[in-house]
Structure formats: C-alpha cells, structure tokens
Length: 162
Image (tube, rainbow, N blue to C red; front, side):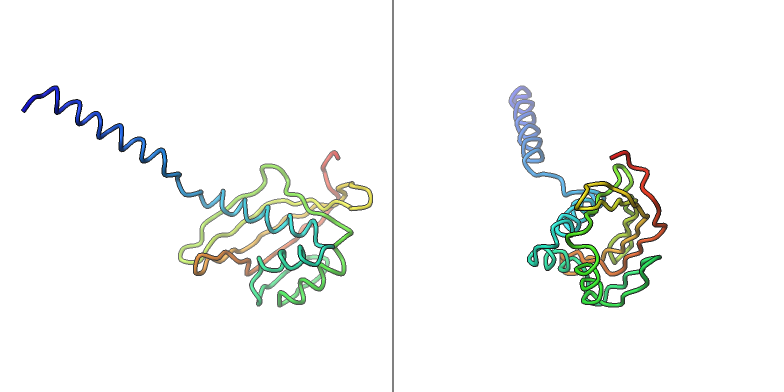
C-alpha cells in the first residue's frame, strides 16, 4: 500500500469528520435551556396586559402549579396564579432577572431547579423598586418544559441603581 496515499486518505477522513462535527451544533446546556425559558416566561409576563401574552405566560406553568409568595400567600393552581398576575401585575410591573444571578441544578429523571434574584419595575415610572429571591422547579415531560413549583420570597427594596 502506498503510505502517502494512506496518510492523505486518513487526513481527508479526519477533515471530513471535523467538518461534520462543526456542522452539527452541540445541544444547549441545561443552564442555557433554562435561561432561555426564563427569558420567554418573563417576556410574556412583561407584556401580559395583552391577553395573548398572558396566555403565553400561563402556558409555561403546569395546571397544578404551586406558587408560594412570602407576602401574597399561596396559590394552588395555574388558573388562580394567572388571575392574581392579571389583577396585580399586568400593566403595573415588569420583571427583570438580576444579571448573573440565575443558577440551574439538574433534578435526575425530572428536570431542573432554577434559583436567582429578580427585580420588579413599575410600568408607570420604569423604576425597579423591589426585588426578591426566587426558586422554580421545571419538569421536562415529552420534550416539553413546564414549571411545577414557584417560590418568590425575601421581598425587599431593590439594590438596583436604575
């Protein structure tokens, strides 16, 4: 066998393999997936005065979601939680994630837990006057991510400078 030919053939195979792997994007990490979902949930929340956006927001939650709010109490269903969101938040507040605060931990054979800090900003003034810690439990079932539990706690004046 011609060794130069064999070497060039191996080089071509290696180059083809590298090109194929470069063409196939890596699946997103769990952190990136949950970060993107967090953005989607709260983009809809931030525009929930529009009924279609309120429905888009609601679609991220399991029907039996439990929502624990240290100053507002507990709701036991998506319908009750969304009714409170519509009444107290939509058109009044927007939510922003504190930069660098999102932490994501996998839950074996279930999904993930996301924790972080979020700020709430008044729609009328744009001022972010309050913040709180949050924990969300995300379930992955049949390729679909939904939120099954939410804790929003430690509500306090915001330390944001805007």
